[in-house]
Image (cartoon, rainbow, N blue to C red; front, side, top):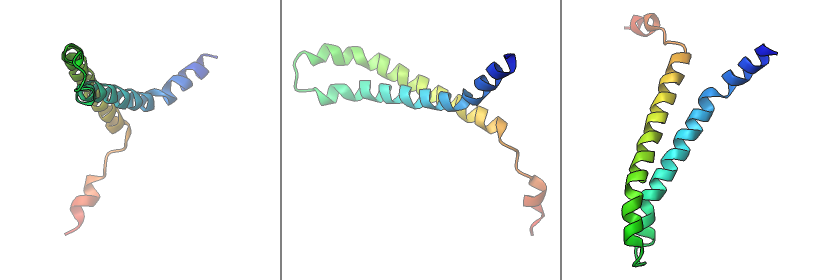
Length: 89
């Protein structure tokens, strides 16, 4: 029973991290682009000023999650054989 939980946890790890990164970056871009979409509205000035900080934060968090995903993916992939690459003259 304990083995099934471990197997389930290992299979959904990096894919969900990539999804979270893309989703977080999309929300950040939406927050940053939203003021330009509704720029004709006079009440949007205060809202657009309030959306800048969460937009940049979520964009930054998304980039960090994407970097963590790339590092994890790089660790699991096999290293290229350097002996083969250097032997061809």
